[in-house]
Length: 297
Image (cartoon, rainbow, N blue to C red; front, side, top):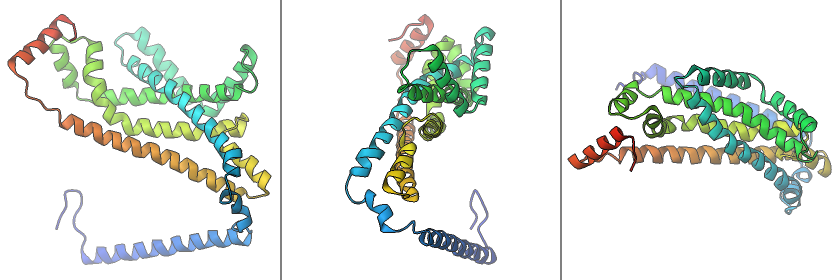
């Protein structure tokens, strides 16, 4: 039986796929056994190294929770600033006016080409040299500045690509009934492109959360990953255990973000499918009059 995407497998192809699957499982089991054996030989699986994470809340309240708070604070501030800024820059890149489009394109390409860590280091130097921000707050300011500049530029390209991916006929039809370009963008294009852009936007939010760790590695920002170093030193060489716990927390945060985005995307798509209403003559006349006069109800 054939499928739209591929032809049905024959007996030989099925046997070959079964052999490939079995071989992969054998290799995977061997790799897992090798990792387990190496850790066990180095005594990294001894209970004494993992006990602090299962024997009371001290490790979490003293090290993990303060680091997680700083990670979430930096990520949240960066998201709140970068998302609207990226939307504005992306829309500005589509402007018909060259004096808007060209400078914005230059800014976006410039900050998108620079590594985020370099932006953080420059931000730290600028805050130390030209502002009165205290030395305790400078790492946070520098991390947020670097994340905002880089991710707003990437989000600008996501917004621009999402809007350009829509059929041109929608813009032309909206302008034909008298809508101005800002009305077309706000009423027609942006609401439709949000659903298409959502997976890419969420992927960039996940990048923001992970990139806060760069501030801890270089700028002494006390985020979640840097707390693992302090924690492993305090409890005595349980580096593998500390970083495993931190990795699980990062996976949980990012999985929650992607799950919420998938739910939101599905909800938006279902709502678009369920809003097909048949308009009467009076409703159509009212919409046409609104478009012609440029007013909104």
